[in-house]
Figure (cartoon, rainbow, N blue to C red):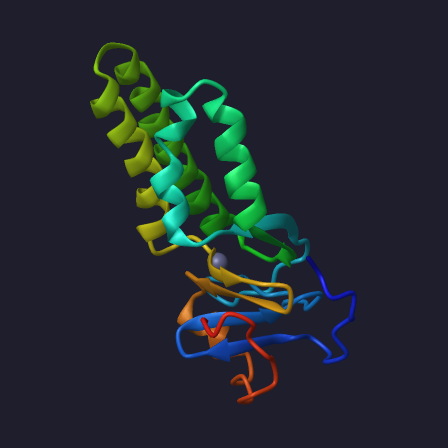
Length: 177
Ligand SMILES: [Zn+2]
């Protein structure tokens, strides 16, 4: 669901309060998103975001026949994706990996518990999803549409290197940030 219009603003990354605001096709400066130290090589990341209500459909995945397909369809049709080259220093990269591992472990335990105690397992799996979105140090989208994305988790040192987003540059289709 992209407009096909390339962003003409060079860079396209702005500071918006404590959020990182990136226009679609925008690029980040080659410094760590946490501590602003120079970083040589970026990681290619694909972020997807969907409205929170989608979590209501999560139990459908397990409780209905073909629930898997239905859940995937619902999530896909309501999701927006944004690809970004993210610069992150080795130290903060290690933090990200640890958090990802913790999330995967809780998810794994949830699946195991699910075999014996259905609802307890579902709760753990859901907790691993929600938990990862609450933890601060990870760059994570708070909104994505066809024009831009906003991200939480960028360091103050990093955000200070960006210019503040000029008001009214982007027309926000949903009236959200
Ligand atoms: Zn760093």
